[in-house]
Image (cartoon, rainbow, N blue to C red; front, side, top):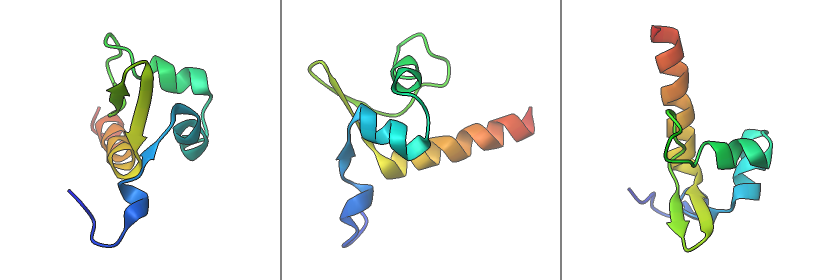
Length: 71
């Protein structure tokens, strides 16, 4: 889903940028990209690199919060 005129939400972010965005260690981000991670971050594998969209990660964060409140 493209946001008209809002490039920031569709820009691909690096592991370091998403760690800064979420205020977590880079190792935490890598931990949540592994196949065996239950609550896997939504991201894209480009060769050996991971890229993330801020809007998808924000939606993921909100889903995590809802799931915790429902538990």
